[in-house]
Amino acid sequence: MKTLYAAYADAIETVLTDLVSEGVLPSDASFRNVTLEPPRDPSHGDLATNAAMVLAKAAKTNPRALAEQIAAKLQAEAGIVSAEIAGPGFINLRLDPAAWLAELRAVAKLGDEYGRSIMGAGTSVNVEYVSANPTGPMHMGHCRGAVVGDALSSLLEFAGHDVTREYYINDAGGQVDVLARSAHLRYCEALGDDIGAIPEGLYPGEYLIPVGEALANKFGDRFKDSDEVEWLPVFRAEAVARMMDVIKSDLAMLGIRHDVFSSEAALHLAKKPDAAEVWLREHDFVYDGVLEAPKGKAPPEDWEPVELPLFRSTKFGDDQDRPIKKSNGAWTYFGADLAYHMQKAETADELIDIWGADHAGTVKRIKAAVAALSEGKGKATPFDVKLVQMVQLMRGGEPVKMSKRSGNFITIADMIDEVGKDVVRFTMLTRKPEAQMEFDFAKVVEASKDNPVWYVQYAHARIQSTLRKATDDEGVTPSADVIDQLGEEEIKLIRRAAQFPREVEAAAKAREPHRIAFYLYDLATDLNAFYSLGNTELEKRFILKQDKGLSAARLFLAQAIGQVLRNGLRVLGVEAVDRM
Image (tube, rainbow, N blue to C red):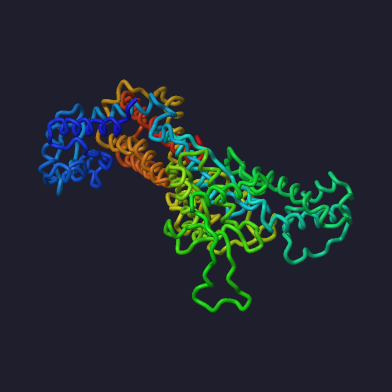
């Protein structure tokens, strides 16, 4: 079933196709950049298109002249009352109110499917997010990226893509050895040793106490006094597995799941970096060369030129070629990461990584690597890296720094215990990911319009309360049969609700799930504004004792707005509450 924006976008395309047939537009004219959206000023009409502006050059005429021809044809389309030319060539359309009422019925008919798109049909997308080192519980440094990645995955699925949610476990670096040694210390503690203060360089958090106890129960004192070479590999694997259980549990509290957990250690064990190097050398993307001395300062006294295998990242816009191995023959993190992305590119049409902003310096080189793989294999693999800024935790205007669970950071579990999953998720999407953000524990639970999550959930709860009251107290239920009684104020609400399908597609194209949060806030604002009219104009209320027909029509409208709010919140992974 076509929604309103999709139907009129098709009408515009039909008109433009007719103009191609008539020779007004060339046969190779591209309609890709033609848009249909609400005009910035609602007084200008219901819909606006830039078709004449985009296609005038191809038609070898000026935009207003082309706009006149397009507008004349659009004027004849069903549901269009007028097509007016504005400015240099924009076309503003005014619709018959019946078109908006038809959209209201579409919301009711499609229900949970309203807004769902087939835009991404046939396209597989791998979204990698969180990918925290498995050395402790999830904390605020991971939270925002986790929510953005998960909401983006849901958004892309809602827009028709086949999405794989992936977590890359960084379990091959030196930090995992530190974890194993920290777990061994707690293991000894569980066996009765007085370990005293945690030595510098080990992880001090109390979250490792149950890990040590579990290891003591499993191994007894077998590894208590043995050499490190004996217990380190065992404790490394055991500690990583147990920390991943903790991480998965933390993510589940946030409503996050992953389809795939890829291990860096397994990547090395399977010799994937070696295979990647062979393939890249065969295609002349890797060569043996010498890195330049560090720029901007005198090189260290012990610095000397060393020949290393270098990836040709300058070919793809990086400022220097990058080593994939160290001088001792070990893989650099970039070398392993390159192989990992090579592995992902074999299974997906598009790749998206969600990274912390502190990784900004590595974006060019990994994009260069994926570009090389795409070029060499003759298959373009679009690759996007979304950088997410850190969140400053506040309480009463003061920074929050400590946690009882971890000793030195606030965990996701701490946050959810205090304010709830929905508050955390929605709040993380109230700013663009690349923008700095504060999370104030007091403000995020405040019952006010300044708190977006409360305001949107309140709008939905208000609708549900109204529907219950109408049924229980007045015996009135929503009805589509009488919605032709709705007037201009109600149609303003429908106009906003009708934007949801196009907002989904626009947000999915831009890879920006926060747009849905912004849209929901605007919809909630319009709904609550209509409710406010009833405070001073009694005839504007949803429930009118003297007019059950109009009440039934307005309740049908309220029910539809509630459906749109639920659909949008579901994309964001937030519950639409019925009571507050």
